[in-house]
Image (tube, rainbow, N blue to C red):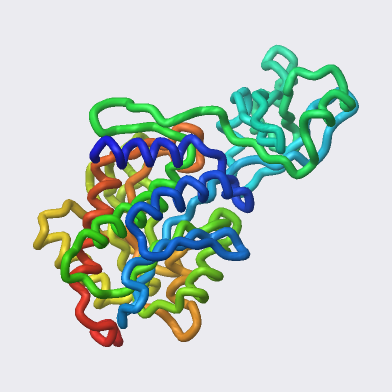
Length: 353
């Protein structure tokens, strides 16, 4: 991955974007899209759209959701502690004791996710996972009055960790799920914008609110009304202790693009992805999905009268934790595969089954 692209990905991952509060990350995505897109816009829902060749006859849609999991401030105690609720699928096993950034109208405030120290827990309490409703954010104030000068009900928080290199192409960050996907669909659009004889209309969308029900994909795919659609998300690796590869598939970091196959996927579009990967020597693996995938692909396939849909995923360790790990080589290969596949499309009718 080149320096400029990596810097853009790092900027995206630095921002807070819990579901329903994606604006700061969306602003960065749209600014990058304006460098090479013919049209860039938003909508009432908060989705971000970047289009090339808006008058093209074949309409292709790519989505990667830009929202992440997080916390919402539900109440403030008399002592000034912030009681919270999860936004999306937050894992209570891994969040207690973490530093957090609380996002307010005046900027971010550092806090910590507190719980009773192990010395103060009863034997039964030590055996249980603490519910998020029993946690709180401590921002170091003395009482409710002081807290209310800083924080409002409905403000959000995310774990205070960043984008860092582990080794070679392996990086760790909060929120690779799925700002990596929103990066991929824009990077693929950039590649397509440089194709001299390319004439399809292609719209990349940074969708919102996927973590609470693929909501942005529902509204944006209806708006774009494509014939062909690609969702980009992350998928679980099985290259760590305790994972049953027979059940979840043999997926590891460095495998490249993970191409889904199953009822959520148009079979001819799947075949084109595989053929394109092999012809261009792009590493890939196939994963079986026996039902709707729970990703943007589910909403895209069912939009309006139906869309020829595919799902391409990035291998990800430790999903929905503060230490999601991916290979930037996999991220780049997903972008290349999308660009090459879309460039190989001749007619939308080729995907009617």
